[in-house]
View 1: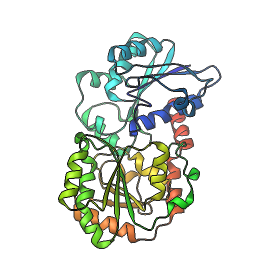
View 2 (view 1 turned 90 degrees about the horizontal axis):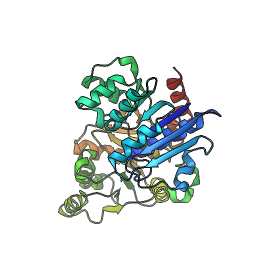
View 3 (view 1 turned 45 degrees about the vertical axis):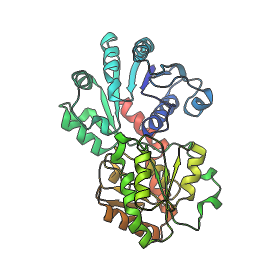
View 4 (view 1 turned 120 degrees about the vertical axis):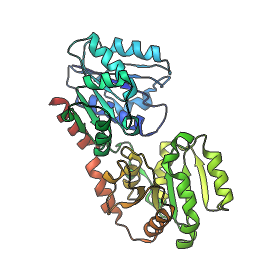
Length: 359
């Protein structure tokens, strides 16, 4: 059997969607039998480096692929071409689902499924998205919250819409980081996010606003912000207005290796976002035994438990400050936090995916 994965991108950025779609690629390759083959088409990737691809594919299973360099016409042609002989298409984004529908229309018997990540399906759908959704064999939602929001916007058989939680990437190896780096004399709040004007719902500005109160409750605390985007100048201006230059650091982009050290060195992780479909970055912090602060919104409550962090009302800056101070001054069981991540392990994800696709 041939399986085709359609992705907005796999390796161009390290945001949540490419990260989880790389795990879909890995799972599909791992689950392939001797005669099965896996293919993928990535819209935004210009090229795919073999070193990047190697951890997420088996050479015996991965048959063909194409990186389309943001060329939509090329993406459509490649998807239709590589769907020849396929029995299943796994579509990584609703915007690409009409292409999967078109492939299915051209090739009777070809089934397709959608991976629904979050905010992109919490809205009314276009005509072609609706038509394609109604033809989907399964819709794989990363959280129950995302499943409910999707079903609010389209009438399809609810039994075809199932929850498959995201998984922690096994390549994010916490054991590979020097444990000596996990201790610091200064309390550090780590935030990792795109700093885009379209992503202000992430709540980074709320963290900055909370810092004066956090410093009163936990003197010497540093807020370290990882990420880049066009909203960074506005956020930096707000830091200057609040006279927080010594307490807030903008570290910009960091690679995976450096990000591992950032997780290891922080005291707590905080991202009080309103619209996380799941919150993969919380899992990554929890893998290092770090408690997380999140908004009580979206899919975040399905990831964070009282043993692994605190939930606060979105945009409630005093509550956010109080939660951060409480987390910074509490004694946490790092081992228990790591154990809580096991329910989102890659082997369990692969097992769940296999059950769904075999039904």
